[in-house]
Amino acid sequence: MGPCEGRVGPNLPWVPDMGARDPCWPLESPWSLPSRTEPPCASAELCQERVDSRVEEVAIYDIEEQLHTRDTSPAALQRFLLAIPLACLAALQRGEDTLAPRCCKDTMMARIVEIMEDSPPPLVLADCLNAACSLSTLQPPLRAQLLSPLLTAAVGQTVSGDWQQEPIHTQQFIRALPYDLQALLASLLAESPDTARLQLIMEHLSPWLESRLPQERARALGSTTALLGVATTLPGFDNSADWPRMGHHVAQLGLFISDPSEDVSRLAREGVHSLYQLLLHHRGLNIHQAEDLWCRHYYKERWVLAHSNSVRVGEVFGQLFTAEQENCFLDKALLAARSPLRRPSQAGLVLAHALHGQAHQLLEYMPALLPGGPHAPLSPWVSQEIMEDSPPPLVLADCLNAACSLSTLQPPLRAQLLSPLLTAAVGQTVSGDWQQEPIHTQQFIRALPYDLQALLASLLAESPDTARLQLIMEHLSPWLESRLPQERARALGSTTALLGVATTLPGFDNSADWPRMGHHVAQLGLFISDPSEDVSRLAREGVHSLYQLLLHHRGTP
Image 1 (cartoon, rainbow, N blue to C red):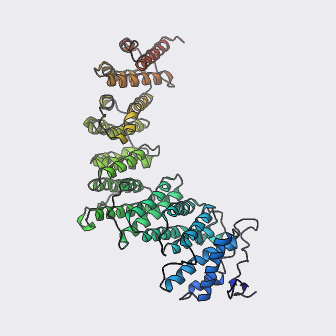
Image 2: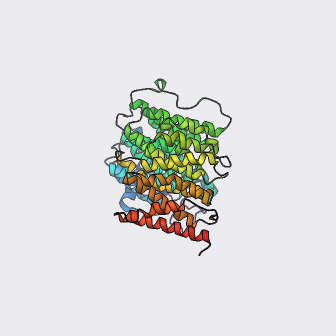
């Protein structure tokens, strides 16, 4: 059979033969594909200046046949996917912007989505992305019901694909997949160039930026940055609508600015800069009327420059954000600050404090957060310059978590710093009145007593002996005498939790005398008869822990 011979369809001069299979694909695989080393005659016509009318007829026939029969054989699927760009190109060359009435755009797109949802191999996925991209250039616009499934399948399959075991000859197609996805997203945005479409696409990319796999985060970041770059240069882009979730996306990209990979950091800065341009345009400003987003100073340490740029992000965007955008920014930054991983936790703290104008002080002590660095200098800043200033509850929660993390490092905290830290942490947490705070912060407020308990337990574990326990108890004791019931309850909960930790802490040195133990036993004993069952129960637990400590000190089992 010659290169242009093949099957014959009704009223068609020829249809290319797609039966030859690539020996690199196992025959039993449901996705065995024709060879891509010698393209079929129909796809080869793409290299010509104009699409031949015969080739267009073949393409339309293949599309109609697939939509009618829904043949799942690899050859039929490939004919269908390669035919769509040909048919679209032919229509555009004739000056038309639709394939109707012969082919329905939504029906073809729905079939492409079905193929992508079956986790196809990379070559088929590439054809799906290119076919969807070609269709998005035609009219009518894609129905809203199809857009979300298309984005879910295209983004999910491209970003999460693991193709390391694929044959070598397919690697060039695999390396091009992220760019195929970027082209599709840009085309979908151009189809409806407005903030609503941009928000929808960003929401499908955003979860992948949180992936635990570095390659998935990098692919999602590249697509996000490319999409935002298109939005800033797209003619006629309607940026008049509000975008409350922009704050979330700014913080999400801002967390990558301090990434150790220079490429990742650069992509993050590009994405943030594009969001900055969009926000300025929405406010009726241009980039020349705005502040410089990035630091221009030279720093020997790269991490200092990265964190300084993160500070600029919080400060500059904070001047332009609406209240909703600021809340989304803070929610994301503070969520990252609670990460058990060091780098995102640092980046989240910097972004959150930058929005309140306090990050420059944090940077002075940032060496303490680096592996192996001394952590003592950070504690007075946390206790005296932030917690003593009666910060809002979200910032206070970050202070408690930061101090708790530092207390797990060596060397132990200097004695001169321990008392100011305890005074600020206990005082601000126990006495805080946050009833008027927004609803979205209430979950953090409810967690504050537990954040304090975690900090006190960590400080006791840093130096597990009676002297440290006595010192912490002396800072809690005055609040047990408060005239406000909520303050007494918070102090009682922290006291009971601390004593419970002391009784179970491995290696706790209980050999020293504790003359003030009698005071604490009596103080807790007064709460046993409290009408509140919860208060009474906490008091009994605290007294029981003191009883265990006293028995252990006396050598009684």
